[in-house]
Length: 470
Ligand code: AMP
Image (cartoon, rainbow, N blue to C red; front, side, top):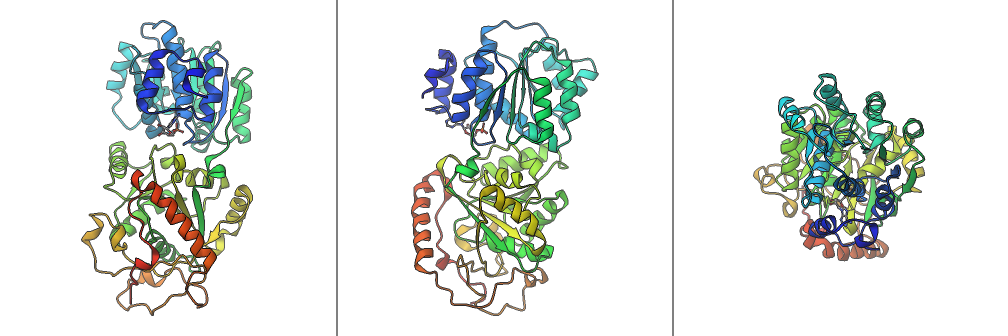
């Protein structure tokens, strides 16, 4: 199937071509023709599937066929986070470049008045987070009677963030005769109830989760015998020091830990920055930009903050905590191995995580392979960014992928107390990888070669990583 088969006009097809897309993704092929007929759509798809274009393209097409109305927005896209709203706006700008459509981005954390001025001039498309949209409405600066198309993006995340009452209120403020395009990665009961209440006979378009289909993601768990926070931080450093970690996102379950882990990584010489909802918007935007431009190599995030961030080609996902909700595991690891690129996820697991691990194993059909890490210290030389090269005091690390590798040398007295609590290796055993492991590694290295051009950097084989204490 090509984009020409979907019923889009030449102006839009030209913009799609300029974006470099050659064929629609499954969610686009399923949702776009239905949305163009005016029917409601329930799209079950997560970030990375091309879902944003699956609602923005038909939206632009339908709006371009209608007429603008003075001071009355004709469409509304609701997003759970400011970053996601911003990314949707960037998508709309890209695809609507050959159309005369106006847009207002209504997100919290930035000044109110400039948004109001844009609204006063008139906008065809509103892209908003629920709180700020209701703020504008309640202050009388916004009319919603003209909404013909309403889109809800990442509804399950709205639920996680406690936005469902706001969403219900907004549904009650827009005209009942409207088209609704509703997207969610998962369908918890509360979301099913919202769909049943506010959508009219929607066409359900479901695509499989990338994480379940992506053979491009190699998943590992690391059993951290010292499950203390310091022990986990040491294990995390060892995990980051493994072979070809170009860049990565570290997920923590708690906001508090996002800051602690980011600070700890920085102290150990890693180029790392936190991103979570308590940070000022300007700070979040800057951190994200630094990460995208490779100034920051490791982003430490909470689920909520990371949701919807459009970060192409993340080589690694690290779960500092295994998520309590198995669906979050799938969301998180879906940040790597995108669009055919290879990627890896490494999840730290302690003795307290048995239940969460069982939930993940049930969802993905088995436990990820166990990886044994040896030691934890500063970034390995070949994989370092410029800022990381600054502090070299603590030596390097040997990180072995062997399942049974043991710590090869006694640990130095100069290590920090944090390091002493590092992931303890299981009983000593001969270290060399067996043939099967070598074979696997060879295959992966070959694969990684293919993606070097896409920015994964040089692959650094394990044996080139020097031992910290050798
Ligand atoms: P999304 O799931 O909307 O976050 O999209 C994930 C990524 O895929 C974004 O970087 C899009 O620019 C990209 N993308 C969307 N549609 C296509 C397509 N048909 N072909 C190639 N890339 C696409």
